[in-house]
Length: 362
Image 1 (cartoon, one colour):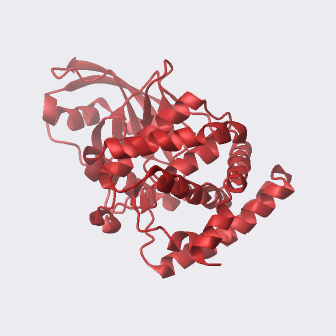
Image 2 (cartoon, helix red, strand yellow):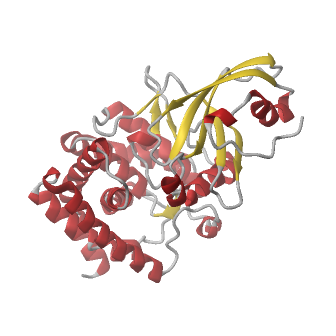
């Protein structure tokens, strides 16, 4: 059977015929029935669980999958098509070259204009998405710290990624960095106004001061770079309920930058300040050990720690960029306020503003 041309846009389009078409070429699979139910938040796309009954399953394929389709909201889809392109590029061109734990991809397809795409993945249930507002445990944080090294180490200092066409955001020249710095200042003002008294006076001051330093922060990456997830936080991680396993999802913000930005963003958004301060040295050490084990050389633990301190500005930047220009919801407001509260505490605890100023000679 030939693969159907049409990319499914709605759940009703995920038919047994379409599934047979995308699964059969490698396995001779025949799908007799497919039940599709919505899961996830649907903020930038529509995610569904697909339960299938086979009439032929010689390869022993799973009985459930997860499929990601574009958002059903046209205004959202128009805004995030670059993210769709980035996620498909990750699964098509990066996934097989890194060791970060991810769901297996069975099919990835995207239209030329990136407005339509379909990503068919293994269903990791009973693994569950992390809760961004509740935060995570020390054990879960350690899993996440080690996992992201599996993206950074295999792509460490590899020049090809600087021009990889699947990047959601490229910051390869000073003009682009200044442009993002200007947008960061604007987004900070908008975010403060939208959140109102959800941010304390101290956090507002920290937030606005730090966001004013985004341009010099981007201009000084110390010559260290790798592919980065870009939005590495609890909402984009799946944890197995028995512990010991995590999977990283939602690759719509793939970029290149100082590797420690991902780790600092995770700890700064996902851990309450007291717990973060207690365990972050150990987390950085575990992350560094994983890098070294996977082949990163000439990178000592103290340098990794200083990079981590420097990278925590990622918390404020990504939180503000994602929030300032999006349609607000009660949960969304609470989530971003929580992330900024934790992130501002990390900025102060780690003295990141002073480090950025010192590095930039300000």
